[in-house]
Amino acid sequence: MKLGVSTYSFWHFRGERLPVEKYVEKAYDLGFDGVEVLVDHVENYPESELKAARLQAFSMGLHIYSLSIHNNFVMPSAEGREKEVERVRDWLHKARALGADVMRIDSGRWRTVKSFDELMARGGEEPAIEGYGENDAIAWVEESVRKLLPTAEDLGIILGMENHWGISASAKNMVELFQNVSSPYFRAILDTGNFVHDTYEQIQMAAPYAALVHAKTYFGGGEWYSLDIDYDKIFSILRNAGFKGWVSLEYEGKEEYESGVRKSAELLRKAMLR
Image (cartoon, rainbow, N blue to C red; front, top):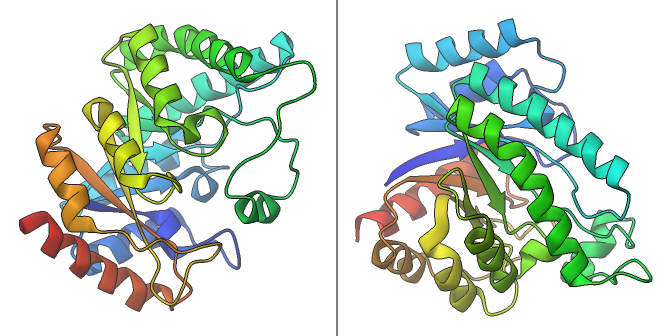
């Protein structure tokens, strides 16, 4: 396994956003092997600047292994879902410019709870849109992923669906999708902090499908909540599942970024080596 860091670890949707080049420098200074780029840090970058960031990382001995985007396939409107598919397809090409091997996608959610802070207070749970249910949402996600797979395969980029609320908050739903689609280019991104209930059981269920792991830490208390995560147990589950890929730090604590990320790196490195 290799340890990388998400640019999200240095910015939690609050305050100044730095150029992506600055986050690459921070990753290098803190001794990480690679970088995952959050889409918010490259939203307005033309492909030429994405390629420049890729070259900068390479010159520092780093690899930009993942791009993490936001999307929503959970909507009754076929036209709305198609727009999301087109937007994700466009980002796949941009991920290729960055040199990413995997792109994080979401299943999406009902958005009946408008505020993300409120959603977090509810443990990520929200009611379905009236007249629809979970089976509808799973079908919409599967349909959308299948439309994206030819592009992903052509570019050689894995679509990594994260357990990021919505229907993907359930490992059972994720496994159903992976088995139904059955493609090496559609796999899981396991977030250790997003299975709020039955954390280890759900991680164990989804681990065989993992392409990437998001390792959450909460020094100084979490921005929205904190979990007491046993990383010895997490890495044991991953090893038993045959996982050998990138572990991407997503520091989500209130402690100052630099010290929180440094402590997180030390914690994860020790657990990875045990």
